[in-house]
Image 1: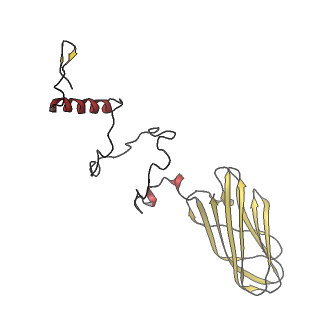
Image 2 (image 1 turned 90 degrees about the vertical axis):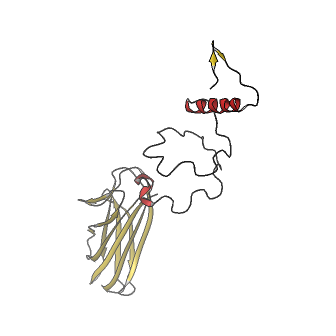
Image 3 (image 1 turned 120 degrees about the vertical axis):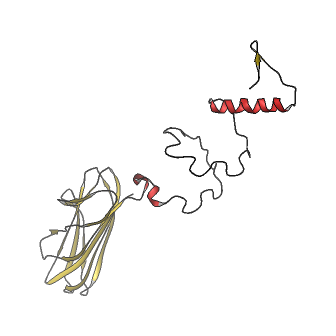
Length: 222
């Protein structure tokens, strides 16, 4: 910065190297001290920050607030595909779903019987083993998709039913009449659920036949 003699800043000759250097130092001091200094457009035009130079939490919470980054401030493609790997996203930012499949399910005749789920994927941690089902953790909208596939053992003309329950009460019952000995029942619904709601599934059939099926279900947080 400028030399100070008797509290009076020294004035370098106008246009001199030292005057230019003095201005640059003042601008740098302002930036470091939180002043109004600025890095002019085009000042950084090559790689100036080395790999690994920014580590850990370089931006503290609240660094960027409100609309500090204006709409359309990033134009064109600035972040190349696959720049951020899936496992780098915080779990709260990922698609949230849980899935379960029962490979060999015997459908009972007459009395609706609960389906015991075995979680295969669950990044929401909502799978409940006792009682069996999905217990949601927060209030919101959920999509529940269920399939019941039967390939043998049913008698054509007999009904096959899947029931979706919320806290023990049926929300939807889907019935299908088996036209042949094989087929599939597909139930897809959106539900507004409250935190701690328990979603369970039941199945039953009418008439005779063994009714061995494959059941799978997926619960998504929308």
